[in-house]
Image (cartoon, rainbow, N blue to C red):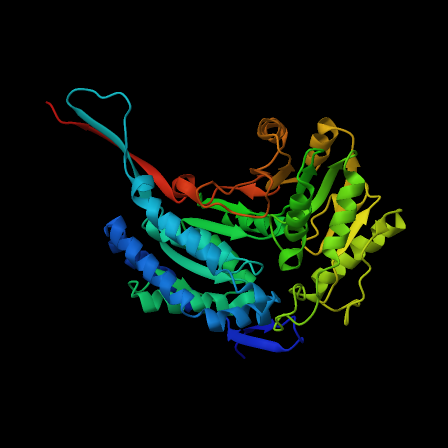
Length: 462
């Protein structure tokens, strides 16, 4: 019997899609096609590569009426938010725009008579993208487009929860006329993925997912010397200072905590508030959170859909129960139909009376729950923000830019925000520290991570 991957919809528990797992022979053939196609692609001018990427983008956006409800059915995001096309457009357009400059050879800074000396940025070869379900288009496009722009071929393995996304990318590239073999979507199981990583046939892997998943990938790739891009867990903090514009901070931090049902790598999971404005902030945050409407993501009124899987929601329920046992206060306690153990439907929750002995302030939640702590000063806030195994983003809410920079310099994180959160600017590198992983995406630095340097030391005068 052929092995299949079943996509269980969080909306009603039905099997929304089912696809056969590729055979080992099909996987090997796909990689061979990618290798053969990449050799010619590497000779294609960057400008020409960009035309294919923009044509792919156009084809993808043209499917939006079908894709938006597909996302809701696959992982639960409400249709009112319209998919991920704003970010996909911004990132694709920017990475195409900067490609020529980012990929051009770097001349030696000290010219020597009779010599030509420079470093070329050459393609890695075959890039494997292992994409997650939470932002299935945005996370995938972060590597797919720049890898192809850099001259590599791409094999995509998308998450089982968002099986149809890989097919949509394939349709868009086929519509754009991208030469065959340069982009291929494969359905693989974990064992096949590990085997491929250890085969020596992949030159770079980009993975977005759990810390455990990242460790499994490093282990599978051990000894191959492939390069790795790993964006793993996050427990992103915010610090609200006394001079923050309170209504702005409240509105944006509530959105940063609960958008996408909190299923965001850079979502706000813990908030530290200066004691001078703590009560005002908590009151506003709680009031704003109570405005959410939890329900069927296919309905326009819904602002918070189900989590992607029931087990994710049960983890949040466990974190809340533990916090309450240890003396925390829950402020929302919203009554929601189907909000019960074993259901993906879950109301947002705001906790106070928490500390770092409680898991909701230390362990990744990846759901609609946030803890708020009072702090006395910047020193205490910085120590608490750094008291985490993760470091993806941190946001600072103040009108004093220099103070925000000084605080940000001391926070162990990949991105420092001021007066905003939960956003990727493609002109800035996306990276993390500690257990959040390694590597870098987007910006010109992202191209450096998707190429290898090759030096040319040419004596022209003999």
